[in-house]
Amino acid sequence: MTEDVQYLEKEVKRLKRLANEHAMALHDLIEDNLPAGYHELLGIAQATYVACKNWDDAHQKLLAAQAQLA
Image 1: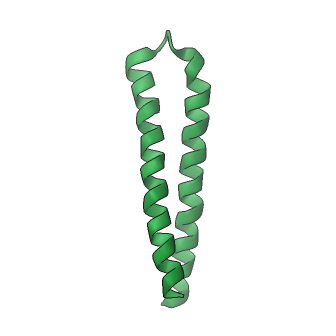
Image 2 (image 1 turned 90 degrees about the vertical axis):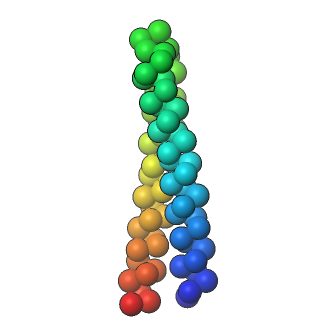
């Protein structure tokens, strides 16, 4: 079980990094390219949403695994 928790901890960190990268791309679009870059908004926003959802799913699994160890 400990190996599962260690794997999930690493996966959560990796997914959080990816979510942050997508969030920065969205931030950069908003700061630098709108309104002219509006055509990019939906794609970047969707990718950011998916990345954040993937992180949240993994984070919830990690919390559940940690609770089972306690």
